[in-house]
Image 1 (cartoon, rainbow, N blue to C red):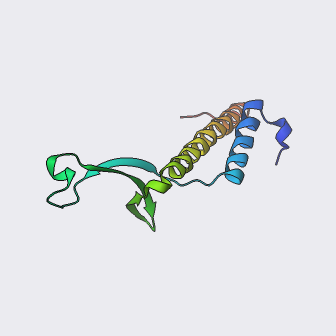
Image 2 (image 1 turned 90 degrees about the vertical axis):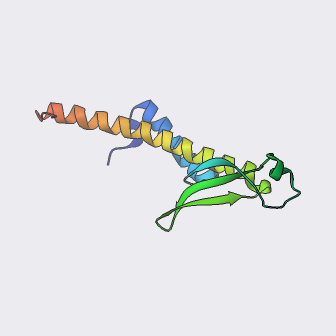
Image 3 (image 1 turned 30 degrees about the vertical axis):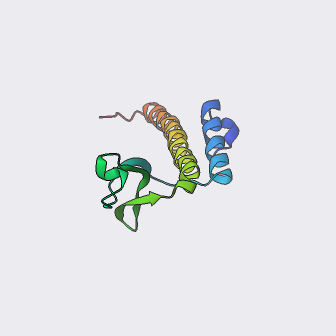
Length: 115
């Protein structure tokens, strides 16, 4: 394996960001969905059309898609966790693009044609 110093600067920066994010911040793979619902009480405001709004985490848990209700006191924290996850994915995509470029360059140098 090559030393990190031989990698392009943008790739080194992306790798450092991923490492720092994974070390410093919790994250969760998924997305947040805002849903409005009715509680069923006859005298509630939702019976007149003003539905209750809450956030759900859409994610995979034990191989199945789940919609997990996020309690109000966790909303801010869960938004940060999902944001961290999306930033990790963004940086991984940048790293992947650099690796792909290295591969394509090496393939051309060896005379391997891409199809």
